[in-house]
Image 1 (tube, rainbow, N blue to C red):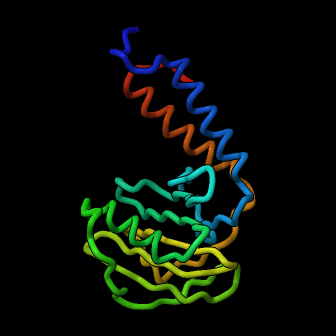
Image 2 (cartoon, helix red, strand yellow):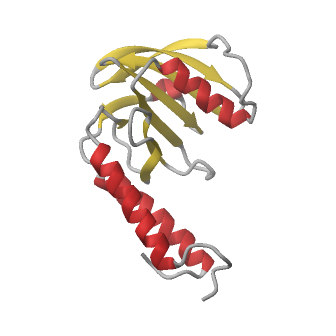
Length: 177
């Protein structure tokens, strides 16, 4: 199969396996969180190998069902919220805005105060817990109804990411990984 100068299926398999192994190696360097009692699809969200955010995605950001991404940052949450909001708007030079309101989200049974920014489609919340920033991006579900828990097993998230990649490859007519 001609891939038009792109990676071959086996080269792409190696890239995916390497990326997943890097996530495994960096997992545990700081806590990561997910919604309590989540029963939908899960996958890796934005994940930086060293010194950056570790994110877990819950649901499909482009679907009709609820979507929640929870990122842990090594620093204050507000910087992470600003990054997500700027990416969503496409305005990377946008100045920081004050939050629209405050809410309390339970994290491992501990109430934590979060600042909340909202637009028509998305809510972003940032709070600090256990010396880390926690950033929540929420679509099609109320951020006020969330409770978070520490995620101890990264494998279901890696499996979910792999399933998403496999589905995209099937749709494109590529071999399986």
